[in-house]
Image 1 (tube, rainbow, N blue to C red):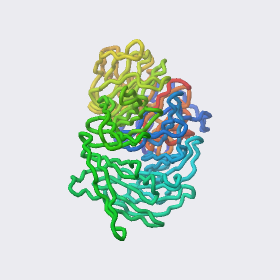
Image 2: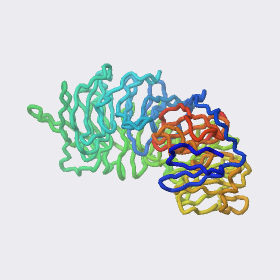
Image 3: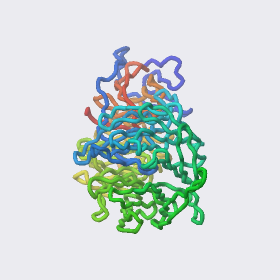
Length: 598
């Protein structure tokens, strides 16, 4: 029999060794002990696994709620961000590099005029022990991935929403706007990392900020119901508000650019491009007024881009159109993006006539207005909760809140196909044979569907395994492919007889010796120690590992990924499980499946 742990308030061991009872939020959960379980008194290894995690590829792009986050650096690589990672993508070689200096979600990005240095700002977050982390801006070298400066530590509040380098002085200064109630604007010396000036900008949302490329003392910011023209002198920042006059004041001004003469063109939520002019006055009483209004899009304009030849590109939100304008804003070309890619979020120039477009459905596209666009990066449009690896091929499935089930090619790092689900997908797992996949839904239903023989097509044959009354969080197939084990949101451990007609097995004791191809379920005797034992607080009550010959991967609530030793049967009721890892993800992360050592 297993000895009960002393002074435990979360679990009780049956003295006959048949079951373990654990309490989660006051609810008892009984887990049956496999027969013939040995119980030695020692042999628990607490040393760290020798393997170290190395990030290989990042899938997806954050376009849904970000702006101006796609650029091309001097090496020709695309630079963009998602979660805590800044990605540098070399398209011809199909190779990624990653800047991993941030401890929480990256919110904004700017490229230095030398096209080598990059500035990225992050949100406030928490460390592995739950202690708050302060937002900051990192200036780093895109060639070496070395951090050159860490700016604003202890100055910014909540997060950094916008950053911009000056241009007229070869990028000597950086402007940043934080996410505090007053949206503090500050100017920093890039070389020294010292603050030069700071001011409260507005209580309204600030969406973007830029230096005038011809005059570093002139800064523009825009956002909800405003466009501000700032003058920077020494330690002082003074603003003039743009005057709309006879023109309708838009709810948002989402983007702006400068023309060759330094004049400002703004794109707003009414679908108009506004050209602003400065009217000089006495004793610094100049005003900024609208010189021209150009009707461009149905709905918001999310992006403006001035091309090398002086022409202007605009991207619409509601109409999904990408328009090309002459320097005088005469329409030249237009193209509508397919609905599956979403609306234009940001635009960047590639080599020659090629354009790069980030979209609101988290896709990156490349192409031209004449020939159209093809995707180079695709991803989910909402939180991803389910992840399953194919047992033999280099394929994996994901599902999430966007009700999409996606199959990914792990060798090509590309989306093979996607399928619409009837509800939010929370978990998935491949049959050991690889031809069938089970998907757990928010509605509590579990579906299994048949994949095509190549693994790249989808057969729409599906069956409902059952309805648990609560959403499904995890599921696993047995090694013989005849049974499925699932966990639900109300802490149930359920077993399903797939081969016997998808029936629910009422007697859970009979399943205690069943062997499972994977083990992502967080409830069960095999992973009882990870909830009950000596893991750090930030890693308790999270997603579950896969049980494999290699040390399993474990995800924490703070978005950390750790690799731990897995020892089953555990010879002691509790003990230290050494692990190593780092913060990569937005919280909460999803199960990380490993079927064999990689």
